[in-house]
Amino acid sequence: MADDRPPQKPPADPFAAWREWVTQSEHQMNKVFNDMMGTDQFARASGGWIEAMTMFQQTMNEGAQRYFQAVNLPTRNDLSELAERLTAVEERLLRIEGLLAQAVGRKDSAKPAPRPARTRRPPSKRKAKAPDEGPASE
Image (cartoon, rainbow, N blue to C red):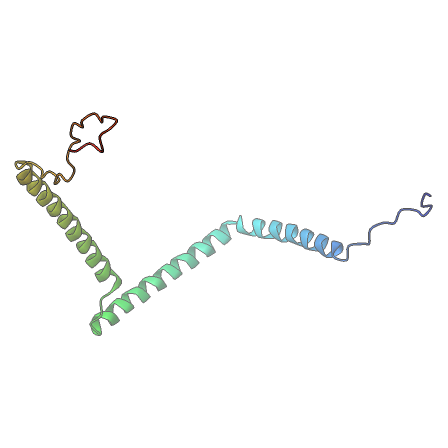
C-alpha cells in the first residue's frame, strides 16, 4: 500500500539566517579594514606604533638589566654567555676523551686479544660398538 501523503520538507534551520548574517558581516568588515589598511596614513600610524613599542621594550630591558646587576643576579645575556662557554667546554672535553680513547686503543692493540677459556673438549674417536659389548669407553 503506497503512502498517499505528500513528502514532508525538512524542518527549517533556525540558525540559517544567523549564519547568513555573520557571513555577510564578515565580508563587509574585511572590505572596510582592507581599504583602511591600504592607506599611507595607516602605514605611518602603525610604523610609529611599532617604533614606540620597540623603544618601550628596549627601555624595559635596560632597566631590568640594571636592576639585576644592582641585586647581583645574572641577566639573560649573562646566562646566554655562560651557556655558550659551557657548550664549548663540553665539546673540548669530548674531543679530549676521543683522543684518549684512541691513544689507549693503540697501546692495547700491541697485545693480542685474550682468548676465551676452553671448556669443551673435542670429541674423541669412539670405538665401533660390537653387538655383544656394552657402551664404548672413551
